[in-house]
View 1 (cartoon, helix red, strand yellow):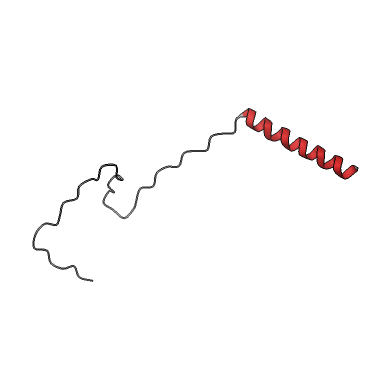
View 2: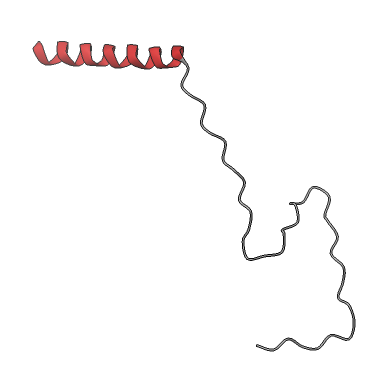
Length: 65
């Protein structure tokens, strides 16, 4: 596909307030780095283990009865 000839310079590009950052020239689009997931806190992990133990105990008691 051929581009049409230009009679002069095209319109200038201006940044939009609050818009995304301009892309650099090239064939790749920058991708923002994902933040690492924060590690589970000990208290949250302990609550999860306690709930799992309670569920298992209730399950065993229900099966044994």
